[in-house]
Image (cartoon, rainbow over all chains, first blue to last red; front, side):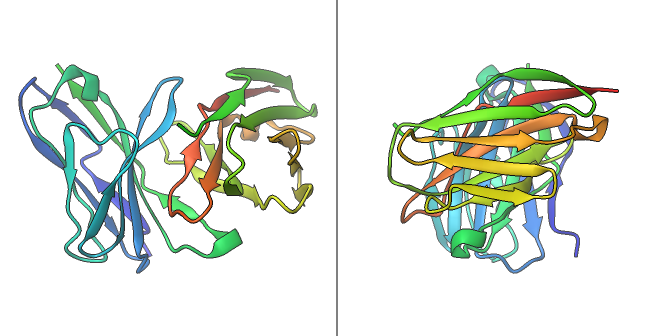
Length: 114
Length: 112
């Protein structure tokens, strides 16, 4: 299993540009998540999904959109990129299992908006 | 807003020493407390986790201590090794949800 894969690994955007961060998992997990990680701020949840066709906002959803058309894929869309969106983005997936929950994280996408 | 406060922000420990990272939460409606380990350039990975009806859980050199009345939990790394140098995040899951609140992270450096 490849686990959780993310593309691209790095990207530089100009202010106002748009892009989609791709995330794919091959573990047949129902739950998928997008986080952003800023220095000293930990991981902030942007959006999450509990299954195909079902998405919901996390703590910091403004400026982002998601879709979940399949179990495997959970792309994150940035519209009108702003410098405040400069961050490292992590996708994660998991299968809720009570007290044995585990989220599996991808390797991350480092995004710079100039 | 539910929060998890993590300290210290950074920690330097000699090889063989004990590393201790603390987290505190403000809301009692959490039902699961995992710790994640992140190496540079990688995504976080689950290290160890505890449920609130257990006061301590040990896996190898890693131990979580949980104090429900104080709303605190901590990670202890015994016999710390240079390979343990990483960033550690505590997290808490609000009861009845599918998502986690993460602490701000602790950057641990173990000196050889």
